[in-house]
Image (cartoon, rainbow over all chains, first blue to last red; front, side, top):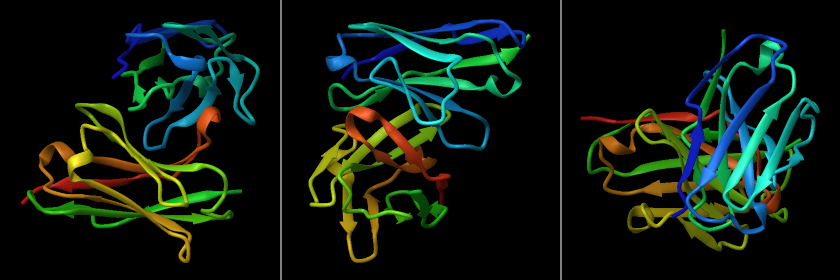
Length: 108
Length: 118
């Protein structure tokens, strides 16, 4: 199965700063089928980005995704208070679909 | 818009069977997408369990396949998960989700906590 490694494990930033999250795959992901999710405590994951760079419905344009092959990035241009959460990447290019272990974005 | 709601026992005995149902509202289970089960535990993080299409076609995670059945009930607009021979490792929050294929898992239930314990 494809293993996804997310880094860093924790990102400590202040509101208004830029966040850059990395997701590296153990093998190339077909058709850039890589998604990003945001999760807050007690809530289910929320889809942010699919096929590496397409924002899901209702997602603000401060969220952007990039990458292909084995290296992918989620960027948040200016952190808002509601953006402090855990972010997961997920590949759905080859079964079994797999998730990374997450990056926690916390207030510095 | 489509909403999903998981239901089922919160406590299952070791070696028993875990059974959950996901009710689909605001849309049809026969729409052109797959339906997923995903679980989340502190130890293993998010783990995809399997998908089902309204036709009954399924895709299972090989790590669970020998114990797993996912089924669909179009009359009740719901789909279900059955996991046999459970152990403490199956303790998790179980989510159902709509899998739009290329467009990702865009709708999720709130999740239900299942604990495996005697």
